[in-house]
Length: 293
Image (cartoon, rainbow, N blue to C red; front, side, top):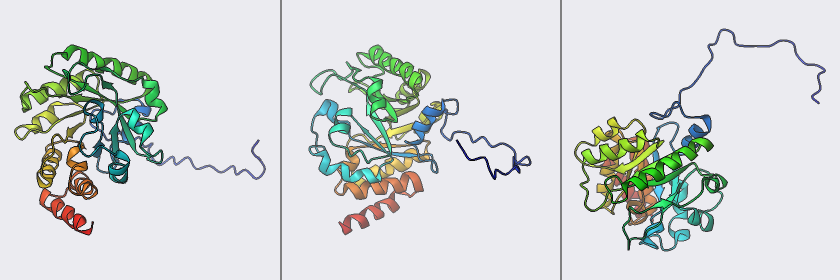
């Protein structure tokens, strides 16, 4: 029991100071529960409102793709520079150090490999395991226009319902099949459907024409997928244009871990996303770090 002797009777209730209630800084997320906002705050930087997600979940359908053959060698050294790690629970447990204390987004859908029809996914993990692993969000692929569109949408809505129950944000990942055109019209459709059905934020592809209409018509934050490997300057231009046109961050994988100098590349991407570096400035910064080895 606390010692009550010497307790002061003078109190300062700051009667002349209005009560402060800070709104949550992420677009469309002000009405979420505290726990969900707190998890999203582990993903999006509180100062810039943006995120650099390091995506290394490719192995769930591609196996040991180039750059991810030995993730303990190629990926672990990059963790210090990532706001968020996007991976599978198997890789998190087997390879990633428990000292990593930033956001983890777990791939929650899966099933077919690159040898099969990719849209035929199911929910591949239980939310209790995500909570056990201290995840900040769960990611589910949504194949708008794909052969198994309805199933993939239902995967997401089931996760949203469970996520709302436990305070777990759900990232809706818009997947583009080979038969679908990657244009603003499609990205608006896919991103809006994910948001309408409850995704806390959306991952989609950047398109050169009209991307600002994709971010404007989506009521929750959008992060862009890095996509296929590009020359470093082109990847930095893509990140810069996406941020300038309303994206809340990037989720890059191959454009970082397949770069000539992966650590230099993720640091250059951070300069673009968080500090507003122009692509040429960031590329010069990248080359200077690369030269230092």
